[in-house]
Image 1 (cartoon, rainbow, N blue to C red):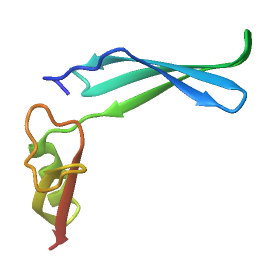
Image 2: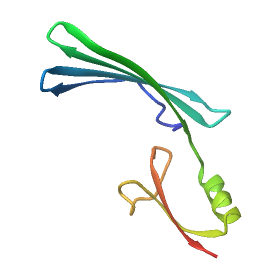
Image 3: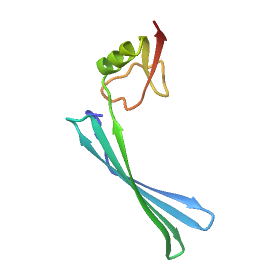
Length: 105
């Protein structure tokens, strides 16, 4: 998250009667460990705008020491952290998604 910061992304999705335009941008709040992602969608048919919507996703990001602390306080011991979906790969500073395996103590 800190190494590969959120960026602006745009895409077009073809649908039966037109297309959906999607634009997303992210903003990082490092002190709170939160990434705010704003998503804008427009559904278009021909030259007509059928629907426009916005949504904001607040995502908390964690560091390995925090995750271990949370697991231990909940009565678990960490077995492995791996990237998702490539679980055999160790997370590094470029990893956005992590899968944890833990055992109840």
